[in-house]
Amino acid sequence: MNQTDSSKAVFARFSRYLRHFKIPFVAAIFGMIGYSLIDVFVISQLEHAIDRSLVQGDLDYLRMAAYLIVPMFILRGVFNFMGTYTLSWIGNMVVMQMRQQLFSRFVHLPVSFHDQHSTGTLISKVIYDTEQVSVAAGKALLTLVREGALVLGLLAIMFYKSWQLSLAFLVIGPVVALIVAYVSKRFRMVSKNIQQSMGNLTTAVEQVLKGHKVVLMFDGQEKETQHFEEKNNHNRQQNMKLVVSRILSVSTIQVIASVALAVVLFISSVPGMVENLSAGVFTSVVVSMTMLLKPLKQLTTVNSEFQKGMAACESIFAILDQQEEENKGTLKPQRVAGNIAFKNVTFAYDANGENVLKDISFDVSKGQTLALVGRSGSGKSTISNLLTRFYQPQSGEILLDDLPLSQIELRALRNQFAVVSQQVTLFNDTIANNIAYGLEDKVSRAQIEEAAKVAHVLEFTETLGNGLDTMVGENGLMLSGGQRQRIAIARAVLKDAPVLILDEATSALDTESERFIQEALDTLQKNRTSIVVAHRLSTIENADQILVIDKGQIMEHGRHKTLLEKGGMYAQLHRMQFTEGA
Ligand code: ATP
Ligand code: MG
Image 1: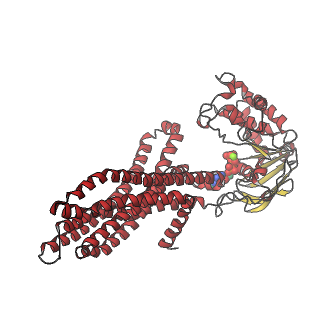
Image 2 (image 1 turned 90 degrees about the horizontal axis):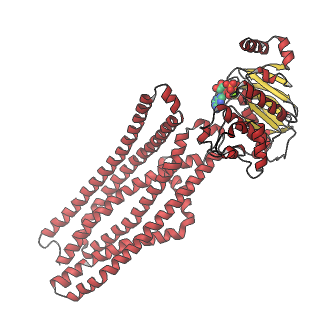
Image 3 (image 1 turned 180 degrees about the horizontal axis):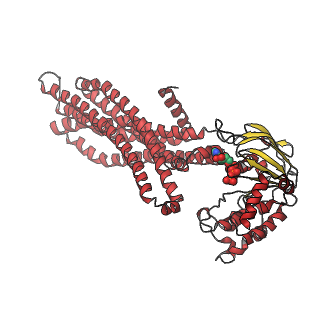
């Protein structure tokens, strides 16, 4: 698609947002045109005011004008309100809609999308780009209709009063059009750069705010400040480019228009060139021409404003066009028994990249515990990511109760799992609400308290002012790693799902708490299938199966005892931990 085609498509899509606002839209246009027509009417009366009243002495006309002028300006105010208010209202509605759509996209997009896009850029799209659409498109429309009507009206007066004088103005039309075309192209490009640099700015801020402790520890203030300064400056430069194009185009066009005015003045100065040139006609034409300069100036930037809006639209639409998480499955099992099978699963995060899992096969029967051990980066968490269908394997199949995962509806699928993952995410809410996240209307307060007790959350909430109703702060900033992990475990306890995935669920706990919680987890693991990732091998000695994974491949498979006797990788890992412990 070439540039014009794509901008047409973007515009067509944008106009669909306006479809619901037909009536307000018509009202807005009516208001804007009415506003300009009043201005035009006032100018059109100049000839009479001068020639009849002042030159010929018919003062009644002036008196009538005196009575009419105030009501007319009141009407002008009403029109202005109608046009501007309605337009802003539509604009804000569109912004709200776009924000909502973006947000809901973000919520529904697959994990792989979020892996590839920085949070800052995405935030900037919701906050900045949507605003750009409304401001730019609103301004463009306001100028186009209101100033357009004014220009047409003034031109009509000029030609009506003296077409000979007005011809000069027509000559400059094409020149103005050329300049406008050039400037808009540049505007679109620069606007895109600005959007990108806004995204970069947000990303930079976000990262430093999130990682401020690292910045403090590694003395990164200078570096980050400088880094931000570069981006900040780049943003400023891009904005200045926009300003320069605007100023230059406006001034050029005004100079061209002044040429037309000069021609008019010159023609009028030549005796006999124009017949019947009365003072009133002359004044009307010259005033109209001067009045034309301002709306003309605004009309030349109309396209650029509009381009700015369209560039923002394009960036928003690009997100809205992203494929949502695939959810073609139709099966909705209420509660599975918990048989899990991996059949020759091969997976790479990046379709062209290296395989992170290679030909993985195993079976776990309901109620069993499968332990995954292996070095960091070997692919343990990836297995749990595939089970919850955050990603889909490139080849092979995963079955849950003999149903292929892809045939199960996503929500029904994820309801079958309770996951305590390596990174605990907490929401800026109370501890109780964090434990009950997503289950608010299904569980009672007593159940939440019970889960909190089992996961030893009550132990530390007792000392807090509001107990379970204490706010945890953004992402649980006010809690220790072990405390956060306990909340995550309480979540899993409360969810009571048939399959439990524990990815280093107790790694942040001290040995004593770990023992208590391990007991709780052991109880929880009874009667349900569990997949446990643990570095501390002592916690998995009783597992029904142990998979030793290395570089995405299963190296060993068996029970604790057999693997020890085999004297392979597992035995070696075990030996190392044992000597460490001693
Ligand atoms: P650890 O014990 O450190 O948690 P792990 O066995 O859980 O390690 P995985 O998280 O499964 O390891 O990662 C396996 C490999 O996949 C690693 O090499 C990692 O670089 C890569 N990887 C993990 N997550 C992603 C991702 N979102 N995008 C691309 N590659 C990833
Ligand atoms: Mg991991």
